[in-house]
Every structure is written in structure tokens, then in C-alpha cells.
Length: 294
Image (cartoon, rainbow, N blue to C red; front, top):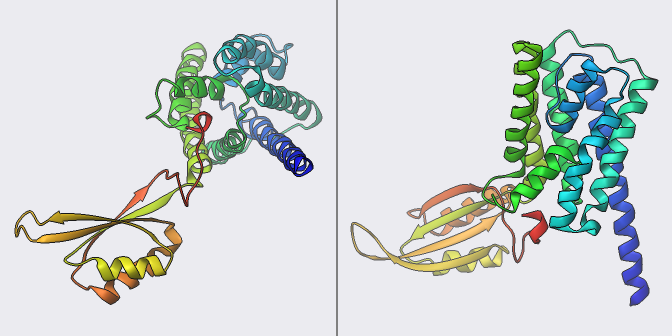
């Protein structure tokens, strides 16, 4: 049993290392190939490093990112402990190395359409950040700051917290270089990045919730249970008629919506059904949740 646990732990560590490497490479590649050649500023500490690099080109951007992250990692260790931040330190160092190595090895050319560059670049950065957050890592800077802020602002998604901090950095860049166009392109890129990040982090748990209001929910409930839907039954009364009603609440994956509708209409064509999007569902039958992933 002990050997099995060790194998599982080892395979999980290897998987996390591979994902961190992949996420770090995508982040660095998007930055070097799309942001830098097209003068689109990145948000967060990478954006600050970009700004400083314009004044002191001799200092590599990756090295600057590492130096800027040191104080934030110290705060993170106090809040989360060193063990939880090992993966973030690794991801930050790896992405910084990738940034400098790619910039040295390949001379990327700008894309004629800046809008295409910021859309693709923003999507790639959001994808990379989402991959890293899935394994509890960040590249430091904004993502780590957002994770720390998440303890105090649990109702705000990681992507939105990152977007807020990124926009402040972009505003600083725009004010320093007085280039509104580049600032606007950067804002678009960071907005796309936040959407992509939330899609990766929360999209895995996205589901739908059906609220079925009917006169007698016994047969519908029985049928849905047979189809392996989870159902909660609530007794209620109609607001206008005051008649006894049944409310069935059912959470399900989007791919099963047709199956649910068919089952309801088959048994009660008068049922009143409300189907809503659920951004995040966890618990029995769905995703597990930990304090660190909230």
C-alpha cells in the first residue's frame, strides 16, 4: 500500500513538473514572439520589467522579473508556507529563463496587425497562467499577488484580480511612454488573458442547473434518477394559485441538456423549467475543492 502511494505521489510530481514546464514555455513564447516585437506591454511584473528594459536594455527582462519577485515571494512564504510556493518559484525561474533564452536564440518579427497579435498573445498567456494555476503554481508577480488577494476577496475570480493589477501596470507604461495605442492594445490582450485564464481554471467545473417546477414531481424525479441525474426535491406552493408544487433542482454537465429536456417533456409537458449556467460546482459527483483552489 505504501509503495502504491509513493508511485502515485511520484507520478503526480512528474505530471506537475511537465505542466509547469509547458505553461512556462507558452508564457515565454507568447511574450517574446507577440508582445515584445509588437511593442505590446505585458501586465504585472513582466510589464514592469519591460518598462525598465526600455531604459536599461543591458539588463535582461527575465533577470529583472526574478529580482522584482523576491519581495513578493517572501510575503507569499509567510502566508502560504515555503512548501506551497516551491512550484511557483520553479515556474517563475523557468519562465524567466525561457524568456531570455528565446529572445537570445530567435529573432521574432512583428505582426502587421497588432490586434491579431494581442488577441493571440493574450489567449496564450491566459492559457499558460491557467495551466500553472491548475497545479498550484504561478510565474510570480500578478498571479501570485492575485492568489494572496484571493484570501480576502473570495468572491472575485483569479482572472479579474489579475486583470485589475495588470491594468494598473499598463496605465503606468502608457503614462511613462505616452503611447495610448500600445496601452489600449495591451489592455485588450490582458482582458483576453483574464477570460482565457478563468476558462481554464473554472471551465473544468462549469455546469448547468435546472429548476423544474411541476404539479407532481415524483415521476420526473424517478426518471431523472434512473438516468443518473442528481436531483433535490423541494415542496412549494404557487404564488398565484397557492396550489402545492414540486421544485426539482438538478445540476448536470452541459452535454446532457438534451437528455434532461427530453425526459421532462416526456412525462410532463406543462412543467416550468429554468436552466441556468453555473460557473463553478463542487462536491459529491462533481469536482473536489481545497482552500488553496478557491
